[in-house]
Image (cartoon, rainbow, N blue to C red):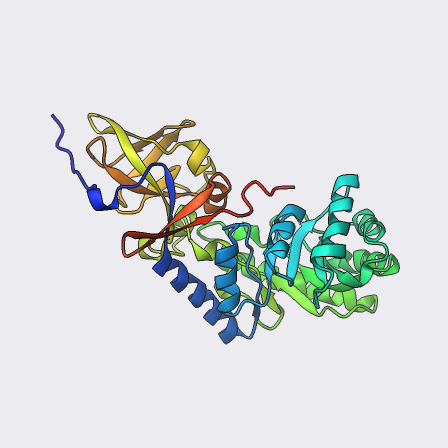
Length: 368
């Protein structure tokens, strides 16, 4: 018979699965990044797609963030309705009739009194033309940043072509505010510094390309959480990290974070133990199924660092490396926290282990 370790505490038992925030760690992470940006002489525009929370975004701005980054029009709608006015949609929008109408409503109503134009990413001549057409009559409320591919090979143009896009956008009537990139290839144990070097080089080349067509880049935006500490402060003017507020299993396994930095986990219950083969009630519909090439499993157990989640089904997490009694509650760290957040309705907020609040995931499902 296997011996089991019962680590549950009746005073801390929650309905499971629940998305749990450690408020002290959250505030500490927010303050640390704000301090880093200030010391580096860079503006901080955090990506709120990580947390999708009005409360957390307000804490970020209170700590010194100059604005926020979103990924979609619907995220912009949620945060603009809550009073945020300095917003960057860091995505090359393709504006079909529905999105064009929503963008016009956003500009004409929610953001009509904003002193800062809505920033939007572009990476093609056609996309810029489409945006200019959609925002006709409201172009004074929009500015664009040309997206540059700095090595992640997702969206974005080669740096040398940024001037072509900027020139076309300007001819269409758009204000070209600068350039941006996402160095996503920093998600590699050996790639963090190299990705940051790529980022600085390509953004500098893009700035030069804009200058070549008479456009001065007022904003030079970059930064992922893994690469941010190596950001080239001679090139960048602002940083857009997102995951830093919570950290996750990817940051843990990249060496970016220790367990004591992790501010978000999924409280789950062990429902079965067959000779050390554990099942917990947080599957892919709660944790998400992302697994990076360097990841050692589908998540980590915050208080059991030797344990691994070896498989996920929709409602099952298979765990090895620890023996726990059925009924024991555990804190699971998702591989990719942004996915887990988008699957939840609310956060349970803890301070020193006790529930102090519940916050809605305000932009949950705001993916269009």
